[in-house]
Length: 241
Ligand code: ADE
Image 1 (spheres, rainbow, N blue to C red):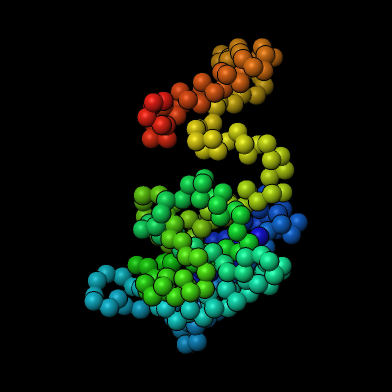
Image 2 (tube, rainbow, N blue to C red):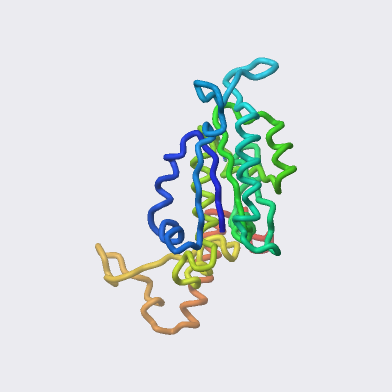
């Protein structure tokens, strides 16, 4: 998969060279390119923002650098995917607190795409015409990490790339570990324990030491339901809540 990121703070993304996603890049499974939006400015100050029409607080990101950057990145989609049969239009994601909420289902959906472009806004946002224009180049998604406000799209983009990236085949060494995680089956994950069996007077639940796999599986399922009921009742269908 190819992922392009447009940001005025590219060094935010240095952390994505670490750990599993770093390995995926070295292995050629993930082609991640972070670009400074200011590359597509032409004035001396490399200006990316301006005052809002209609007045109001803060600054708005100018459309011109976005248009040029998106043109360049979207036109390389065919090259990114290499095969003619593959999708040649990118999926263009703008992190925004005004977008659809990002969930594990969103991550799964996006992990099947050949080419993602993340556009990280700052200030009071991006000129609205950029979203309309981007829709002529690919599928546009405005996506929120949750109902709170960050200073810009960078942290949201990092979270999304990590959630999406680990679903790309070959990124997580043991694919079985993906199956039993929170949210994969709509429930929170069961509790985990390791040695020692007693630590600071706290014992590991007896059932886990029984060696009876059927009983362990049913205990884990019950724990998942109980935790989900207690912490996230909104995830449960009405009859289980
Ligand atoms: N940018 C600012 N706040 C955000 C949020 N909650 N999700 C995604 N992008 C954002």
